Length: 494
Image (tube, rainbow, N blue to C red; front, side):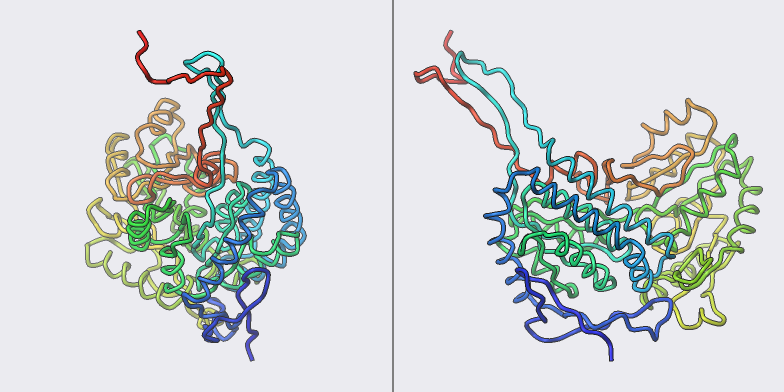
């Protein structure tokens, strides 16, 4: 019988109010059941929001450096549990163990970084236009934050949101993806064991109904979401109508530009990691390879030979380099796009099929797939596939490369490989994306840097780094008049 897990609300582990559950399975070993999790309802959301609202009164008044000390202890607990967490994450969502260790390390780095920022929540002091008057700004917490995350980084991405939120004095209701509920539960357990007071972070498991209830709850003051562009658009509509602050991190169709002077061995390493790391299931995955015609054929030959030799399998087994896609629905979507690519006239140079044989028959595996002969107008060059599928586009100049790179609805990450420093610096400005890498793939964000995109990738806010603290705080302007008389600012006294 599968183990049954619970929500965490107001310091208590609780079943869903309906007592209903859903099943979470291993995408690489389908007969391995991770557990049964609460199929929560709006009633559970209401309880969690109430607990967060109650905790806010005390937590928001705790000195920020004291909140930082608790964050530091959470980082210590995550460090102690890195291997355990990584194993369970791989079991639940599929990426290889070396990748899930990196996922936990990113959460550890974010914990320590957020802890340090609790001593740097700067305001401003500025001169007043009037005598004997003092002007300054301070930061205040917002209130209850709804956090909704995707499954592909089930520890790192929630901490990008929750650590700065609680560092700033907010409280949280956290809904993990229903494809990674166990990782979310283990993360919250680390918070508890590090001494986070009850009600500061509340965990509500479930499907879309839970997310919708959280977004529309009148006592949730802000929402931070990572997921699809379509869902993000609906969340933005709800938050806009309710005058809530909202941060959206959504899709990507990230280009890697390879110029004719690039180091092709370095490029190859970058493509394999950027396109097939996490089985292509990253918002920052390298999904378009835009290659100068002078090196196109050689690079494609190198890529197909190397990708053929990637070891596919269950990520907790030794030597595995690429795991499964997350579920049967993802299989259908990715295979559907492969058929679309063929119908559009692109050539499958590598892969294009489910990966089968032996243990692979018991999981959701797809071969690394490379399309050539792709034009900028094809759907496989414009739409997010979220799988191990790479579209190769041949170009003849830097200007053509940038034009193609920018010709999509998304703008998250990008990269260029070149030895020409002038082109590298031009690309930093010319490519329409929130992130540009020079001589590196489109993946590899660091915890202390802002993360986010433009166009349909986001709505202007950034995760990570110093900018995320602006999202989780309100600026309050303060005037202190010690003149002893009424002074009228913004009045023409001439």
